[in-house]
Length: 512
Image (cartoon, rainbow, N blue to C red):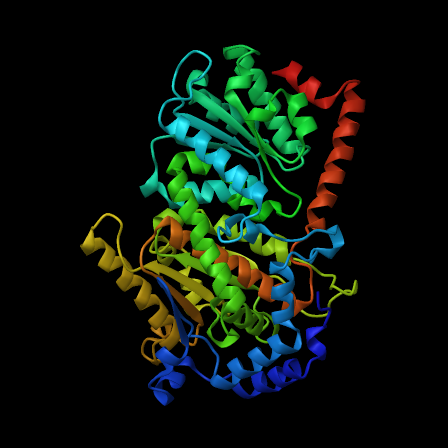
């Protein structure tokens, strides 16, 4: 991996001077001066049309950002990732979640895992696979946390239109009330439990899994565990000790990070819910974006454009947050999914040289679905004092042919980006109804919410994250910041155990 402090580059220094020259320019003036701006500052690719014209950037900004990408050796870094080099140097791992969706050159172990997922999911959806008492499976409970939960849940909600009949429930937080509420709502005789943990040592997941296992035994039997419990893990020894057979275990690999594990067997529950063909389309859509990212010239490269624009706002406008507003209720879980993938990846303060950075990295991601968001926090976007770059995501076609409502939805989306850009002139008579405008937005138009297009959208954001991390000279794919809290929690739990003279979990079991 290149190890270049971006602030030492010629482009960075030129961008600083350029920012001082352009920081007070207005977006509406850009359009007045350039009648082709909408076309010149947009990228069309397959079912995507990405419009960055309503950002506070000029042709010179774009030129300097592309120069920055060249100086930090972004092209070399992209090739290093796709070629399987150990770019996650602090953990000595390759980063190859993209290999999980590359059907043109698929690893044999990935192909075998997908075939296993296909066979098993089809048995479930066809009613061939039965529970211990002979009932067909109608519910799957996914037990995981972080990427093992956020990714599958997000896709399950996003692709509700494509569900095949199996209902999914998710247990992640170690909140006993929430876990019990989930168990109270299901029939153990017709439920599969999928425990997803790469290491099979994650305390929250194992505590929840053990609680669920005990509950299940009390409802059916210990013998029935072999029929109703599956695992997704790289730790066969711990899985077997838990009571799940090798036959009912799906693999994970060292070169797949947890927050990017959706594409692996960690997505098995989703595969069952939407059917294998739709799950494969999800993977293929992501791969198409991978190819675009790896091969398109940077001037026509969607993730590169989004990543560089984000650097422009983060490091020169000193923006600390970015909003994401999907004008699609099905994407209501996209925000928490992006919060993990973005902030766990780029929330780093040590660079690839092992030195503390003296510039902003990362960014706070937040948002909600439109039009709900318009009646919640858009006041801040329009008239607040903060500059908050915002992505607007909308689908040009409705899934259910409700044309009138869909046209209203699109009109709201387009109106908001227009209003944020242009504002409303100040009036002495009505000063409170004036809007300065000049609020930056990017609009991502997608033809329709299909599994393939969802895969492309998610991969687009994954690669945007990597572009940012390369520029900031940080390791986007490790997660040491997660470990400290785990260590402290373990120490506190041990102290609780000492106070009570027994293991804390046993103590809590007795208190039930």
